[in-house]
Image (cartoon, rainbow, N blue to C red; front, top):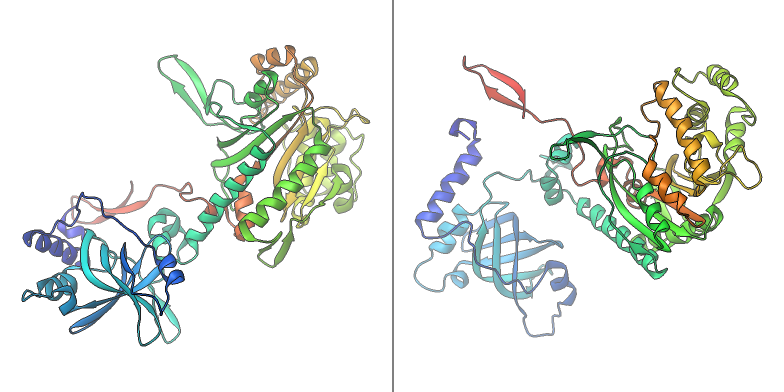
Length: 517
């Protein structure tokens, strides 16, 4: 980076860096810094009656008030913030006062990482504070943080632009209160779900991300090429078919937190890379899985938020069991007035036309029904609702309904107007499964690039015999949105997918031009 591209503040900080080195102070020391206290714990355990506690803490300088021979600053560590008091004569008990007068006052900046050794006390204003006796520079910050300033009730320099926040999440986490809490809750959510599954004796597994056949869901995959094997490979769209192979192999219950990839649109609830949890349990059906899902979500809500009620926008969503159960046909009839039972493809296409739903020639019965439900019904289900008994054309991996062969034993859990979970009584008849794959291939030939490809090895696995099984997949990012009250998926992904950043580079003629990095 040339000096011309640096701001005035960045130039000043680089000069401070050089000045520190001239004084023999290494701005990026290699040695371990032993920390024995954190901000929140120090405040919680402080007692006015106890002997002053000696502490060693570390973190970023977030603000400074320099007042002659004494100063205050705010230090932020991984847990929170605490005030630090620096007295010139305590920091520099000898004749040489440069550590305070020069290093602290002139060469340190907001954003620098420092270590503080000292004792804890309460100021006359009542604030628990660390009295610094020793300061160690741990890392020099060369770029100023966008620190929010308040004046006359107005915020200045706030770091609120979504694109900036997602692109520079490392800054967002430092300066915006509450962002880190979202991701701490996300971790609690994963831990809680793991605990629930493990307590039932189910096994966490890993299955391939690079797959020769992108199976297990109807979605457009990302394609790559393996040079050594000289074959195309797909980033997985789902891990379903591999987990079922493990049920064939004799595991009673398996689950995986699966990073999936779908080469499709992006919006408030979709990212091309997302996390899904899938679980398969033998000798169970979709009725059992509905009860299991209710119990699981109730537990997770309590573990993460301490309550089964979650505020999302204007809605209070209750995850207290039992959840409402509505058939797909009932849902469509309720919100459109049309009865889809027994309707063929042409009749469904006419219904779509009358409902002003766009269709194309590649759509079969399943896709048409899916479009009707998505356009007219899905958004109405705010409270957790199981939509059950899907038409067979919509569910190529699902067992036929035990009382109606036109339907399948499938449910989707709708929450806040979006699908959260999807579950089946799994199809374990290899002949029926093969025929369903063939029907999917016909859709592919019509131009449906989301239709499933025949996975012959999976058929072979089923031919060895798979016990009755129920499986369920849940979108972990969407669940995190619900539990943290967020309305966009980007808020619960540390680094959401974005276009390359446009930067200005000096052209040869001296004019600036925008290019993509």
